Length: 139
Ligand code: SF4
Image (tube, rainbow, N blue to C red; front, side):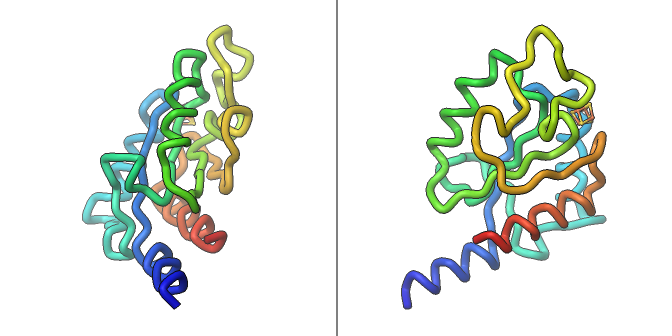
């Protein structure tokens, strides 16, 4: 019963931690846009959290540079189970315009498991909200 309650509360009010592993910043701006009053994801209970230790969802933007690999793995390990990973933007999904660049270690699913991919360069806030909802279905 208690387990069910925890699962339900996670689904109804997921906390997300955002990490940039080499993005050009546009995807990050779209995540911020999703939080602004126009799209207002908080009305669905989705909250951007400052620590991965308190998060249910990891939002990863960027192609994963070689310098970011250790940090991404550490943040992934710090996030409590059950966790969901959402790759936001073409770079996070496949490398995007940085594919085959000298500094690329990614895409994200080469480093950590990914549950949902949100394409686009950058994806619109609506797509980001859709992606988070799709991720929640997996909880
Ligand atoms: S997908 Fe496009 S907007 Fe997002 S980080 Fe890559 S280049 Fe920038």
